[in-house]
Image (cartoon, rainbow, N blue to C red; front, side):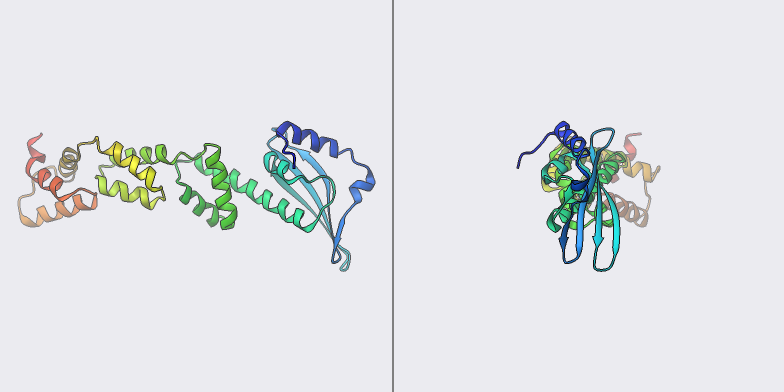
Length: 246
């Protein structure tokens, strides 16, 4: 199959609009169900092809019109023209339309903030897309450079630093968000340049402006620092030195 670029697909869609009435009325009949592409129209930005379909159930006397939007890239791979189409071609059109919409929704989600591939897939599935469509949409966006897990993970880690979190909680949060092992490891390397002893001391002083005076207060502060992801050595340092820095 020859794969057309975007301009080629748009030109093809325009040319197909000029088909004869006989071509426009052609349909593939399978068990009484006839399917035909009756028109193709490129969007103004050239990113999508609007595919108008007519489905006829001759046995039941039913007729339905459908309009599907397919990206020009996916449409070029389908090799579909106006006129009758097979059931397999119809299924491929439906899948391409769903994939096009999933990619559009995913790009919109990325505009609101960083997402791992896994979290993006989960969000698409939560919005009704199948696992297959969600996985393919995210994979295509990754190939196009929309997903940069390593750099995104580092940005998320930096925001977590600003919250006063320790290394353990930051890395656990990245894993929970679905970032892969390589992205988490790169974030770890960036975080290794931070002085978490001093950060722990700062977090302790912020939580308790004055030094804890009894065992119960120290235990509460220790539990707080552990929840924030600091290690035992860092917490001991903080309890000894936090209030000497003022």
